[in-house]
Image (cartoon, rainbow, N blue to C red; front, top):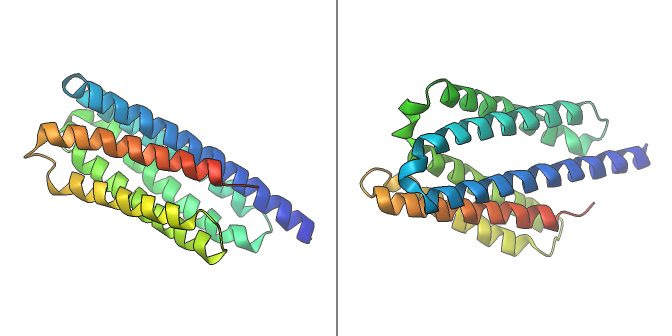
Length: 189
């Protein structure tokens, strides 16, 4: 049974690594698009954001359901978190896709929330990594704190500083994407 649990945990880690790497790559691409073409991309960005959230939510939901079927107790909490996150993000993506023009006005608030939540998630993962003695825990915690700061910046001044917010959003998303890719690379089975 222990070998099955270890195998299941390794499979879950591989799935987490892939999901984290893919979300990181999507965040980097979105950040570059926002930074380089701010005027032309807002509505497209909102639609991409809606699709990205819907796809990410669906992937998290499927991975959570698959993980919940495993016998490993360590995977149960991860599975529940993935299912809840998957449903919430999938619903948000569908809502955005249903009315993208409405969300154009709030794109930076949404990006700020996403980056802020990602920063919190990075800090939680860093804490868990620190608890098991992972050598990258301090770097991951620092990246989480910086990601949190970018999220706060996006939430504080989304409308007054549209140009600055566009640049900050692009930089924040690229940074967040890079931290997700780094986290995916550092995950070992």
